[in-house]
Image 1 (cartoon, rainbow, N blue to C red):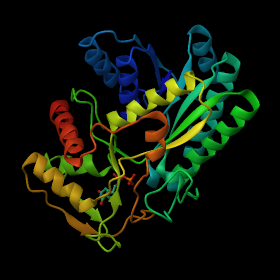
Image 2: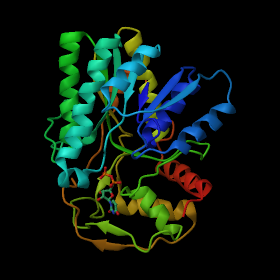
Image 3: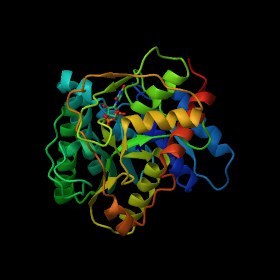
Image 4: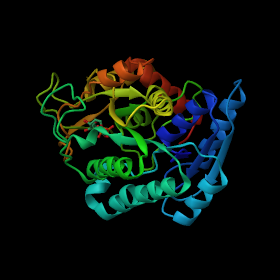
Length: 335
Ligand code: UDP
């Protein structure tokens, strides 16, 4: 069962699972996910052989009765839990919304797993658990001191997972994502947040004439060109890691935490230039103030998951990531 499977990362995870032959149930309340994303997963998988079956349940992780019923009525072997709110800025305005949705509802999932004897969970965590980095690249052993409610809410769930393992034997892998970007090669599913706050889709929307301006948040950081450095990872590479994590758990691996990034940092200006190169268009932008809570530099060490699970990014180059996002934006044709 993939919670949040109608969302950006969840839809790519569901697709990779199906293509790997697993049956998938997507549970999503469609508060930020989209029903037609599920339809598009069905279309993509229709063109492939030896894929699993896809089921969709319009369900809410806050509804423990429904969760219990879904887990009782279906042979669920593992949960991939992605359903969550994920906007850092909003989390600092509405902490209750984030703790309620991201933490309290995770307890529902875990309690239902206990009741339904579901033994494995892969949890979507975040680089935001680290807070201001003290050393680059960031390894899993780096201190965790989130500087925003979103990161704190994810770290709390990691803590819950440790206790549910100790008390109930539920084994987990927590994947700490860096900057997910790009889209499935089909161009049929991709990044679609409303409102959009992420850099690559914003730059593409600017190029497509869908937004009047683009602001670079700060140019006085201690980085090569003064703009923030981030580690962008292709969403399909990210999705692949969930399958490796699940299969390792199935084979008896103990609980683990892994970073997921490319290990390459790109500045905001480099991202804008790359969108310009990929689209063949000049991207206009202005320099604005820093965005509160933005660390100057976030780059992952993903050596642990590479060494232990054999994960390897297939689309590490920024231009490939941007090109896949560009294809999705064009095909989706949304204005
Ligand atoms: N960014 C920017 N202008 C925007 C949106 C983002 O300069 O309109 C910068 C942001 O400050 C950060 C980087 O782009 O340094 C990536 O931001 P995003 O919100 O995509 O991901 P985050 O790193 O916050 O998870």
